[in-house]
Image 1 (spheres, rainbow, N blue to C red):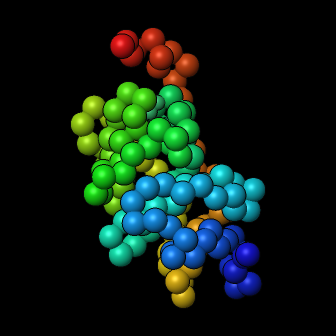
Image 2 (tube, rainbow, N blue to C red; image 1 turned 60 degrees about the vertical axis):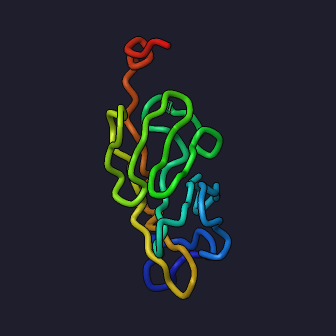
Length: 125
Ligand code: FES
């Protein structure tokens, strides 16, 4: 569903569809996004970890305001997108707002990360 006054904005889901903790995956206007409750607000992010493109719907763990990718333990503040711990790139968000109990995003352009080709050579486990 798009906004008749601003066709770039699309409805992702009802806030009530989102669990208190965790990421939920949605397809919106040709985009795959993940949405999460954050206190009395919502954040909508791209589906991949900024590190090595791990699908965060599987690897992402939410605890309080902290999102952790379980693959290499990069962490972010889910409210601000700021780095926590060893992460090297902040989290990106889709512009979003809650209207009448529904989550809307500006879906006019895909929010994505740049991945360095040699990044996997920097990390050893
Ligand atoms: S792929 Fe997510 S922390 Fe490395």
